[in-house]
Image 1 (cartoon, one colour):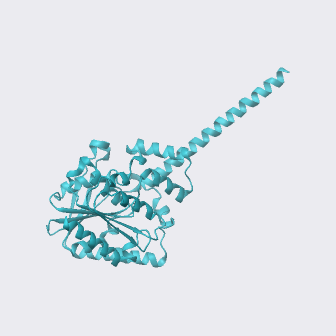
Image 2 (cartoon, one colour):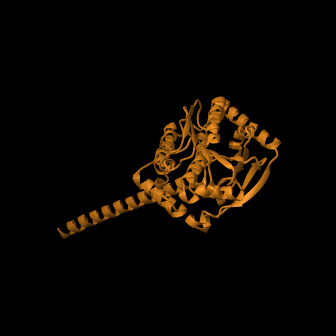
Image 3 (spheres, rainbow, N blue to C red):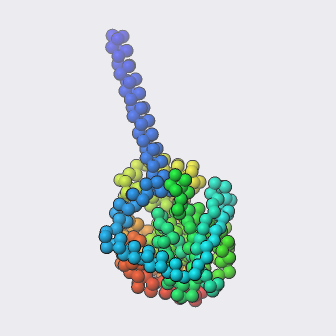
Length: 337
């Protein structure tokens, strides 16, 4: 009788230990997965492989040729137009995120000191080459052009500087504007994705209003970093259980100092009273056009919108004339003000 009770007690004890061990392995697995997602999304480890194969980003042969031609056009313009290079230190950010966030970054400038400057910003996993083809449009219309290095540009993965989808980069932009002496210029920022997010966050930040931004062109931007990260994790990896997302948010907060759900571009847009142009691709299956539309709908200042034929990253190649017409209309709005 006692032996039976003893065996029964041992059975339930072993079962409890197995359940605890199973839960432990599950939690540990979710934590490790969250770490991998953080490294990919913010430190860009293995991001190139993921991004080049993702639906809406992977290019066919003809699309890749169009993209290469577009980049080459920008490279030719940059090489044949006199330019200067400079550096600046990102110091303002240390007031919010500490000394670990301080960097020294580079920029290219094409200037005739015309008192009107556009800053061109690329998106995640892109480089300056991915926006140089915008430059000739502005230059030919009497604007100076500045293209900065963004966090993560050209960094070896093992020593990666985090890309923060505009959160840190807004402060970098503020210091760049001061360092390059642009505070007296009519100033427009044109950006794609994370670059556009940085511009919107800068313009909405009351502590940085003396940056003097006079207009923003935002192409294919997210709406809320937390919600849209969940959608992207589900889309790319078919992951997204609450425990995993909680661990991912924990790592972002611990390592970068902010919560992704607090980065809301619709709220930021409601605090921007300057002119804005919002551009999205009708055929973008990677970043839903609805996200850019939501930010546009919340914009407090005068605005223009352009829904163009084309997918992610290829709007200039596939709808160049319509894109330039939208920019020209926006320029008239900025210059009127």
